[in-house]
Image (tube, rainbow, N blue to C red; front, side):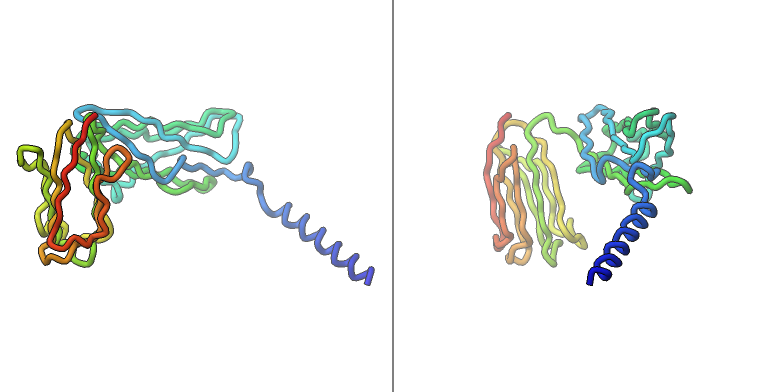
Length: 238
């Protein structure tokens, strides 16, 4: 029995040594990655902003290292004239952090655009995933956010937003969401005042959950069982 214990312990010792020799430690891997997969990038209305995206390496070198930065044009929806992205990124000697300064102008942002970046692979470099910069305009007034989760008939839903005088501020007519799935988001930048939001369904059977939020709370949060429609009056003030 003692001999069996001896051989078992010997086997485990050899196994552990073998694993430690074959598995490289993270600091030996030439690996680089963006700080996250998503990044919120706000742009002032009628202006431009520069923000810093961080990139980390798994190891530290005694010399500067330069990496190529690419734009995924297939996944990017931002206007090509709206953004400026450096072609390279340098991680200084003795550091594992590099900074990429991206500039975006308020050009055709509308309800939001995306700029997707990636680090170019090389034979001796492992890279993390892409980063998506979610671009939106910064509202200097009161930002109200509408979210709609579509049911099987998104073309049936329509809505209007009116000010206190009854003037339409924004609207979406029936059929505008035809063919869409999942969820949509719309941001309103409203001056101080009272507004009425009305949502309608063509066939009077509700058209998916929706919510209006402002200043960290819900104005309305509906499960979608509103029949032909419903309206909500609310006031915003900075």
